[in-house]
Image (cartoon, rainbow, N blue to C red; front, side, top):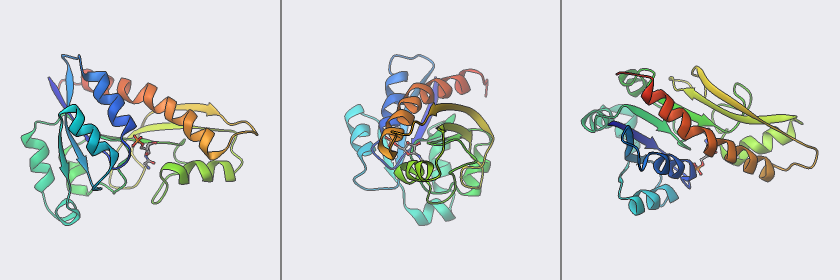
Amino acid sequence: MKNIAIFASGAGSNAQKIIDHFKQSDKARVTVIVCNKPGAGVLQIAEREGITSILIEKEAFLHSDKYIQLLKEQKIDLVVLAGFLWKIPANLVQAFPNRIINIHPALLPKFGGKGMYGHFVHEAVIAAGEKESGITIHFVNEKYDDGETILQERIIITPEDTPESVARKVQALEHQWFPVIVERLLTSSES
Ligand code: GAR
């Protein structure tokens, strides 16, 4: 049985989809939810689902091995960032080489980087007059939204679209693809 850690700070809809996907699985399970925001919806999901949640302290996250040790103790095979907005420190990236993935609600390298998350991304996409957007699932390195792409899927933007309608279309793609890619990565590796 492989162990997944989900890092999330928002409503947690992607976390919920991944939890549901693996509920009946004998291959993997969501073992821990790591969150940096007290009161985030994802913490309620963790509680309801009976999954351990950890609220992280910024200082220890950025300047110690505390959370690396914790993830190792839990025998985590894959760290999944699902709406987690802090940059992952180098020591954590190095402790889980090619074992940390992120989902971004646009077609990177466009509309990525610090401060580009959630509705800010969709507002920028509409403001730029883009004809398409989508999702990028990628490996995480020490820079924001920069690691090797695993999957991109696209939506078409029509003249009637608003940031809200684009957000809905992109979210549907996230929910469709993120659990599938998590499973693919876990089952294609023997580590
Ligand atoms: C998702 O749309 C994800 O792509 C985005 O946060 C949302 C979390 O939603 N992540 C970023 O923007 C990262 N730069 P959720 O809490 O409902 O899963």
